[in-house]
Image (cartoon, rainbow, N blue to C red):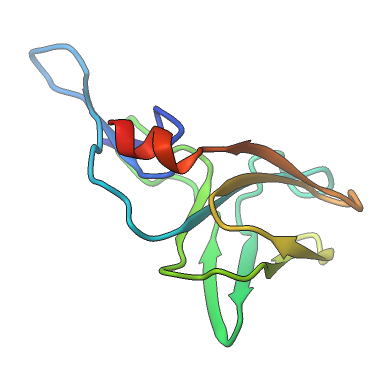
Length: 139
């Protein structure tokens, strides 16, 4: 089993492998009333998959931490994206990325409802996509 945001709506879907039947995609159609942010990390000095990176996301007084891990399933791996549910956060936040190489990056102006790409050593953070609220509700 592997988790992936297959449809880009910021909730995690599942891919399930079976021994005697085709792979199944289980699409998460839960209505999302709260906010989320996703991050893709790309290493340059660190390995490209960014295994071992620690990301700290802050919205107001609340801090969220996650790590990029490898080997998260048997004959499968999750999408290499860090996914944060941030509740009803309204203001922009900050993110700190701690790379295994020792590099540390900090970015401000992180808006909920987006997927960002962080490249080790780059001065900019890139917004990959934003899912409008009406597209989430249409499911």
